[in-house]
Length: 146
Image (cartoon, rainbow, N blue to C red; front, top):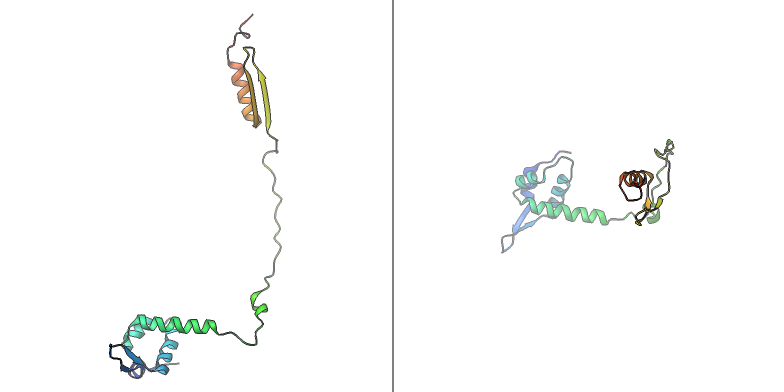
């Protein structure tokens, strides 16, 4: 559907108020809004060609969109519109293999010959092995006796 923008511009502004604001023809205004709602339409370009402010046309568009959003189909069931069934397709997944066996936290208690008592709780085997190795390297009076 082709439109004549010059004819629309002539019909759009029908007068001016005392403060300088325009008075617009409702049918021409609606026609301009419908043209602006078309895909690819430039609101700023159409407003400029009609000789009116693009922000005013954008306001008209927002009001029109709000009216269209408020229109409810009387024959439609509101519960039916609230839920849309989405088919679920099962996806085959490979079972996840643990990389390390699950080992519960360990506890280490040690009494050293020099009277020091050591207790380590909630750690893993690697930390305990490191601690035992470190304690084995220490010099203490009982280990140096011959």
